[in-house]
Amino acid sequence: MKKSEFPDPFEKARETTGLGEMDDQNDPVTMLLRHKDVRKTAHNWKTFQSGAAPGRIVIPSEVHIRDTRQIPFEVDPPMHKEYRNLVEPWFKRPLQTEYQEKLTIQINGLIDTVLDKDNLDAIGEFALVLQSRALTLLLNIPYEEAQTWISWGTHVFRSEDTALDGDKASILYDYIDAEIDKAIEYPGDDLYSVLLNSEVDGKKLTKEEVKGVMILTFAGGRDTVINAITNTLAYFAEHPKSLDRLREEPEIIGKATEEFIRYFSPLTQMGRVVTEDAQVCEYAAKADTRVSLCWASANRDTKVFENANEVVLDRKINPHVGFGFSHHNCLGATHARQIMKILILALTKKVGTIEIIDARENIEELGDFKRKVGFDMLKIKILAIKN
Image (cartoon, rainbow, N blue to C red; front, side, top):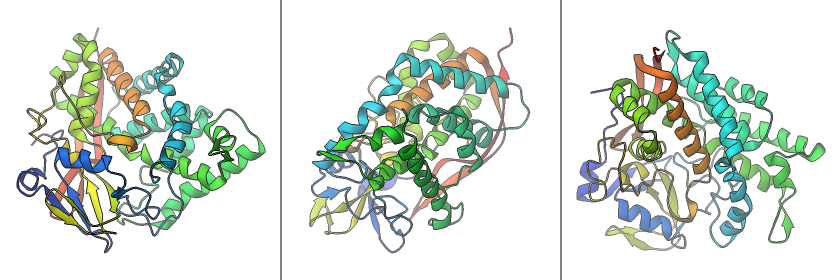
């Protein structure tokens, strides 16, 4: 099997029962695997809520390592809309030409530093660096701050071998507390300051609410973006003709970006807490139990996607749920899309071929399912185009 292949472990269960089961710290999760059930449940916020105890809809659960509610992620309507309306314009800034130009300079500069380098660490020396530097644009803070986040490594929010590690998580939380205090004393044009000066429902946001938005911004777009970048590099390494095609047809880079998100599904699933006895997929869901919306399974549903287990660069119809669905679709999706589009375009202009030197897969244990989500280690060589 090629390093860039991501098998679908959910296929049999999706086609038979449509469900999977996993235990999460003695708080079991019933996984919804079919595209239609995932979308229908995501839309039904009254019965399947996000606004449960902070951390409970995340899998693995984070209820034991934080009591700060991530906003607007862990808030349901009608307040969700109030928070979303406040922050969404900020998170749409990547659509601006100036933002894209700055991101292009960052990505081109990084590629230039790694071209023809032997034994490049695609995660630590490329994807993490790219993600961290791009985040400075999203937060509108000095570029140099990225070095702090890079120094944390790729596993700052969770231990590598333990689902829950409060000491690890506190690195981020303490950092955000300090940055909020700094913005209170020295307000500027950064996201911290903008939030501190904003109102929802006629009231200024509290420090705790600002912290909730910032935790989501940091944690929500870290591993997912790193996985998307790294997995895409591995794909181009083993499918050089795909890179050639995108070089010749740059107009399909947008479609290719959506297809990579569908195929790799950087975030496997997200939970919901059942508010009342309900039924989904002929399954009786009891109140106060958890179900998960398994994006990765839904994105391989053959009833929706033709050749679902193949990367089709110019896929015409692609209703993937890689960025979630309905009112809780990913707030950082615009930023992530721009990173991927600009990265792919830069690769077509600068890179001839990519070689995989060594790799170790990152496998998630999800009950009876084992899902490859990316790589724990990926050593590559990016070779420049020969003139």
